[in-house]
Image 1 (spheres, helix red, strand yellow):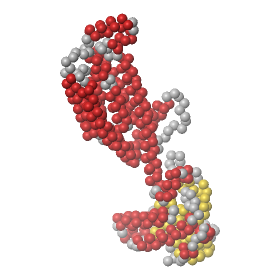
Image 2 (cartoon, helix red, strand yellow):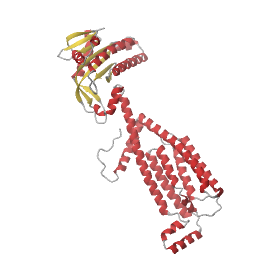
Image 3 (cartoon, helix red, strand yellow):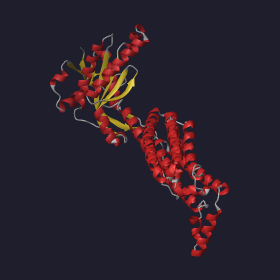
Image 4 (cartoon, one colour):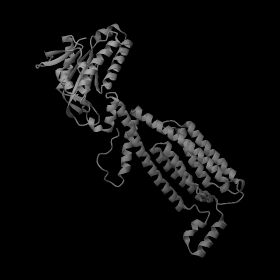
Length: 463
């Protein structure tokens, strides 16, 4: 998770400090999280496809407009440059890949240089002599905003800002070269000076003199571009934060689905507070274990052992989720399961009994020598997040857990497949448990549990 400053921003440009502060953390997070990396890669690929289509559409539009904007056959020169612009885009598509691509960056730079070249140098095939600075009167700079907009769709917010700064530097550099080395036509400057003198308004000199680069407009163009680039950068940064957050939520939901049934996952997604604050509530706790599994592993290959465990865990997961339970943790060849977490339900006790019977039946059907023992108890426990601030650790704590674990261990002592506490049966009966669920169970009062002085009334399922 990207950690944002907890304190409110107290200085005027705090948002920029926040962006810079999260840049390194974001890069580290993406590098270490394949899910986030894949999400950003997919987003980038989709953006590049959109840009490819948009760029082709823009080229077609300008190819149609150029003949109307240029006099005579000189428009073919600009059509040729437009073809170069289109080819540059095609090469960028070929070189595009996730991460930094120097070839792709080179063609972005070539687009900027090409547009600056069109503005800075007049058409060499034109039969009319014009000053070099005249190219700036065609408002070619407006196309730079198109490059910036396409960059927003395809690249990271850092790249968008870098492109904006690069455009500003190249554009001002091109204007400086034209101003210093450009060709002037003296009569135009003299005529402009005469008109300004006649009108008495010196401010018109730069506008009327076609030899003038019009630095005030060039600086204004760059200033507006940088403001737009900053706005798009912040928008891209914000969108990136939302994307990372959505990917993180998807990963968290996938993690929850390992322990909770799909219905409970949806509930937790809408009410995440259900996992946070620890609270005391009545739940059913189940422990399962494979009897004699160590001896079984000595007779089987590692591949066969892994295959059996996967089938065993798969059956338990299916049954537990069917009954609305939670897979709390895996304990070697055993499993801890809870019913009534994270939110209690009136039918949890009955669901735990049904699940115990189904687990025994399912493991017997697997065969291959697998034998499972189950212990279930009902009582009050502490449920909630007991982990540190940076890591969610949903846990169930209390004596109910200890009793359930010892009930499972007691199955060996009493020769039973399932041992459930009388407290569980009493709660299930109060919730309307049908008598058929207890078929095969027999009452066993005063069962002594290892490590506990108090005896427990239980029910046994031996068959």
